[in-house]
Image 1 (cartoon, rainbow, N blue to C red):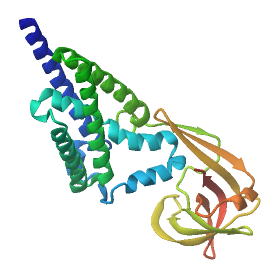
Image 2: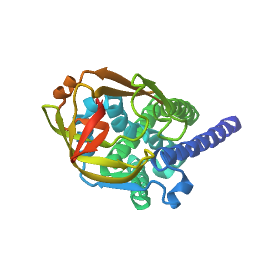
Image 3: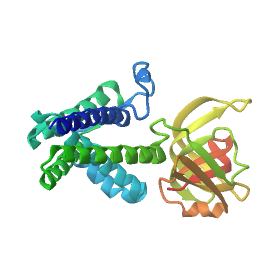
Length: 308
């Protein structure tokens, strides 16, 4: 009996330690994913948004999964669900007051609500009711795991051992995925950049950046373009937004740029194309232009088209 009690205590201590690590990880992933605790109170990079319409974000992710990539779309939806699964089985294991699913649901809902409200108040991210829904469903899924274990074995020691193993696997797997796929965003590593082609593209800021509205004979109309007026030293000292006409010809160098992000590395591939390829662009294509301003038009020397 004493050995069993000692094993129970040991497992409880280990599980509590794993729970603390898990909660710290939650704070890092949700609140401090792109900013440190000190930077929050220094007003660094503040931004916030809010969605109070249930399932709006979920539907948007499903509709745009092709543009985002299947993994990214899956990660945004399933990630919010999976990340709360350990909460669903650890809390009722550590505290008998949460032995009923109702108590666990309320606790997970409260924790998720705390995260969303905190993000909004501190201006450190987007607050979304869909995140609360997915987080709570994740906790329910985690509670289901515990329910299955209790049906498989009535021995608490075996249940705790299985919970411990599942949590360790979850934390290790989660750490690997977080580092490989989100290491840069979570400030766990630095972004590596690989550039293929386009060595003659100017290193200075583009003279104009914007979305195409219309393309006709040797002329591109850009909408809400950012205009950089440069002094003789080549540095931009004034910036404004307005529509502008881009004039191009056979001497204009045109590149199509495609960005591919994988394993914390951004691979930028610039492919040189004939200027006639510009006529194939769809409306709202994003481009950058380097050139000379004359008579209210920008005569392009270089044009980069950013492919999706």
